[in-house]
Image (tube, rainbow, N blue to C red):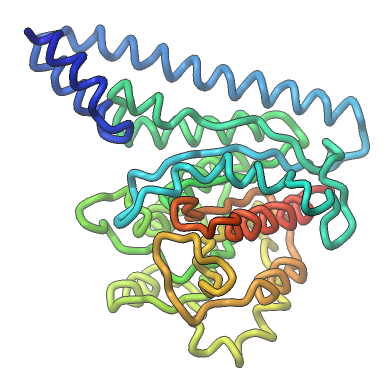
Length: 349
């Protein structure tokens, strides 16, 4: 009777929740926990092996071509379950990749780098988030898998990770991995409508609204600059003060923009990390996001900040694009892809 119900649930349950649901049923059926754990470990090992071997191949290719001091490599993290509203960002990485190579534009970035040169951009694929969760793996272990995946990319010099989200919860394990791998904190430039610094939003310590609280309390960042903020609560401001965050709200952007378009970061630390939440942009430029907040940055505002930044960019992420809310012609996918293209050019050298 159990197995009949189990397989019936298999066919009808949603992808996001079913792994934990299965695990509970397996435990209820007195399946030995070590059997479940061994199976989960095999899935995790297989997932990391695929990332490791793809990163190794791409690293070997870039080294064989020669001349690259740093080379951007895409890593997708299709995670959406830590979103407090919509979970569509889990579907973003393939849509961003499709837009990067869309025939409507060419392969050159604004500063003249060619993306079809592997020394500028490679791709190691996705962390199989849903497949891992389908095995009942909890978020503590999942975040460790994401961190380990990032480290595997970084082990293949000169590859540097540019991570495609996914919701903003992924920034915590990515920044943690970068800081641990480099042996110290980084400076972070965080572009977002929200500070994402709640202590534990809605009881979830890994919420996309709490990622930068985890980063700061872990000591993974020396400076955190948050730009584009226009939806912030009292707790957001208090947490900012607690961690010494430099918060630049849109209501004062006109007087802050000269400073923000001439940033110099990373001196005395291990480098610079950039996290771009697509909703930092005004919804006129990027409607395909879960949390629409009018009054945001223009796309050129963002590019001016990124292009003019002085510092050693060691890793980055682009998060919170929600394909389920995009326009029919994929406008926001192209916006996210352009951000990825320009960040890749910035990171590669």
